[in-house]
Image (tube, rainbow, N blue to C red; front, side, top):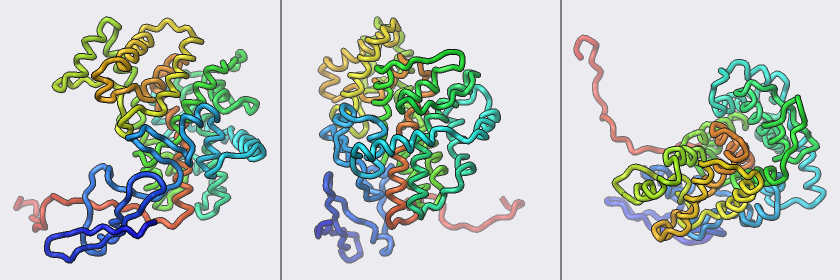
Length: 427
């Protein structure tokens, strides 16, 4: 922390001196926490200018198109690492050595099964229930099954909860899918890698062996890596806010899943396919490109540009490579996927898109990959939640491990002033 100061001038008051903190990366932060004691609040809808916490986990520079996990670029992690190694990094702050990696992977694999009674929970849901609705309920109920380690002040309890969540969420996600199909649940196979095991539980049946393609497994692993954490987004902030009340970690993660369900957050890759449905055919692309350029037209190209990244989404570069690998291997003759590739080609060459920096983002490519693999759009956000679980639990653990306060945002009240109550007959 630096010795910089900011001076706030408010009419009728003495100047207020505020400390300015300098991070290891990023912009300086003015500490306004002392204003409450002086009867003043700041107003920041959406918290776009407010740092709600201090964190050492993830750093984003939207101007540069940079995403770092514990100091490592997302491009390097996606190219050289795998999801469970990234999980270790997010949780513990360093990449594991060979012994630590083996122990971590083994521990996670030992927790992949869920309590057999959890199967009975599914029977209470309609078969046509949205998988995210089921996911919220089942994850929230985990505390009823694993209440042996809910002391949030105990570091060992927090650690075993992290293992359980990382290991069991893929099992629960696949169960949500199988339940909708009316197919039997597939037990996890601990001889398979993390992404391989998920695909096995999704697409395998007891009737015959399901061979997992290494290309598809690698693409799925990359999707997990690229969505593992993204700093203080809506769902991560929700997990921290819920956790600040002392709620158990399963309840906090369920809260994060609920926040992620919103189409403005976790539903972006599903929105990409809905947009492709609306465009319909390659012959309509020029018409829809013109609509996208017309400010008076409500049509928007989904999967292009990003709220945080003002340049190219660094995750998209990696996802684009996997996208083309998957499409080449599967050789799918799907008009929608052909349409997506044509749209990508235009967006990368059209001067308008270059000028506006509306490049394809990670949601554009991940949606195409998931569709190509055979995963229905209703499962897209579930897979996002699966990937993001480690980020949520890492942030929750970081907060609980340090001094913290219960979250209590203020408001700018613009309602009625105090008035007298009138009995019913006088109204």
